[in-house]
Image (cartoon, rainbow, N blue to C red; front, top):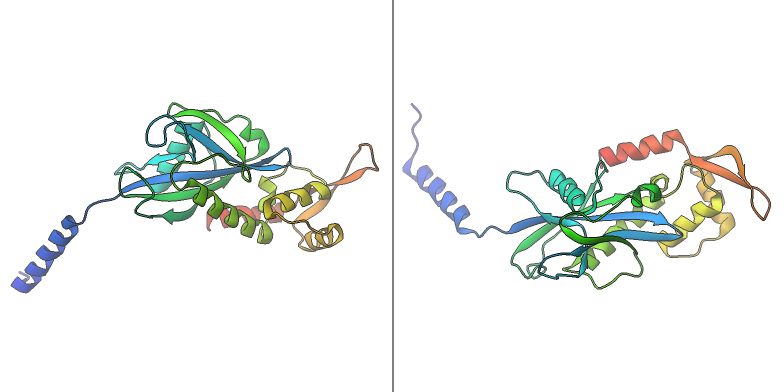
Length: 242
């Protein structure tokens, strides 16, 4: 028989009581979903159906069930509000300002994702949203809660990842010109890039290669490039194991 001292029991009881004494905050998930189309970096927003902020635009998201993993909750809420499914979601940051939600103490875990322009066209408003729409990330409407802050944080993450990974393969079609690639960088980074330096640096990274095909238009034919298989696999590995 193992003897347990009264002092140990007292400490355990006090610990249990102290845990119960703390009020339990609510937890939500919010998803920042980017796409690049028609020369714009866009983010998916839903129009809220219910108070608070009824009628306002907001990020897709909602409350986490008591027995639900966070990743599962994010995937569920995204599908319920936008119809988007089977997409990789990367945890972004946790936002916990006590005043961020008028309903009370609500902590949100934000997620970050990118989808192709083709897939973006298929998004729709689910039962939990009045509407779903893509907005230029640099021209947003008035947003509910602290969602503008969350989007700005996600944009910083996107810029950082674009500069050191092959994340661009998610923002471009399978084949693209160097001008189209440079446009993505300039729009996301919000700065003009010297054409010659950009091409020299991007080709030196070894993440894209000449496809051997040309695109014909009003001017001289432009070479088409694609991301290398090795670069894509490395980026997928980073996303699986962030």
